[in-house]
Length: 237
Length: 176
Image (cartoon, rainbow over all chains, first blue to last red; front, top):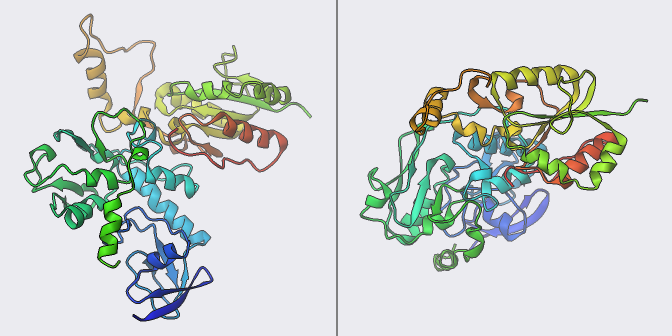
């Protein structure tokens, strides 16, 4: 296997051919934020939080879907990138109705944590305040589109790990929604195995376990997806 | 030099941020040993005074009264702080925004009422079409998110301002 050497934020690092910038950064303890990235499932570069600068390229690249190359010079942190990340995070908040104080994921939310890490203290843009549905038809779980950031971790984990492919995406732009099967209520899905993997990987309160009060600490009680790690190792990722 | 003048304002919020301010406990003596509290729900003053140095604004701007008040506050205040999530993001008051005022009032005052259903139209101020964060309507100098902001954060911020340091809101976050 070919080994490449490259620089991330001025540090000399090395990785194998086929690895992403995100993978190599993680291995070297360099933290690049990401909400759609989750080890064990394929990356898709959806959230744009992991954008980095690559020397010689006029464009920003998503670190999770950009393969490393020999001699690459990557800037993962500077004031301009932080500004872009804050802007991307702000838009995620404003596209749907995120109300941290009364959310099931309050204090267990990657979007909330990220906004604190980035120092996002307020929004300059107006809220869209869309009217969106809450699907409570499943006997164990709920889906609140108000909180969905369209990271599509649920789509990928259901397809790639559980193999059921219940979740997919319908419509476009601001109308984009996660859908079960061909747009049925979750409780009427004939493919859902009720395994709960989608709920476990959801970074926000969009997918949640029923019967839990607000901020009951649902995530703290869960092991961190041991089977995802096993799967990752089996695939040699 | 005269003592700094601090005001607090309670717009559309639950007063939880003011409770968090009171939760400064004995540190409140330190803050108001160095500054005067000239207006707010904790003070019996009816009109927002002139020449306020620092104003903590709790709550979203939801009614015609809120709107009028926040404009007055802005005109008369040097450093305006959006104090807590409702002021910063519109938070819980903003949850009505996708619903609209008319369906909201119908639901609250007609459909769910058994005795004498009627939409209030006297004394209480009219709702604006949407509940907005303070910075959508007037300029805000400092944002202190949190539901409510932790007393330590409030203390640090006020202490910084009274001591002439660059104000810090490090550690502040949405939610609680």
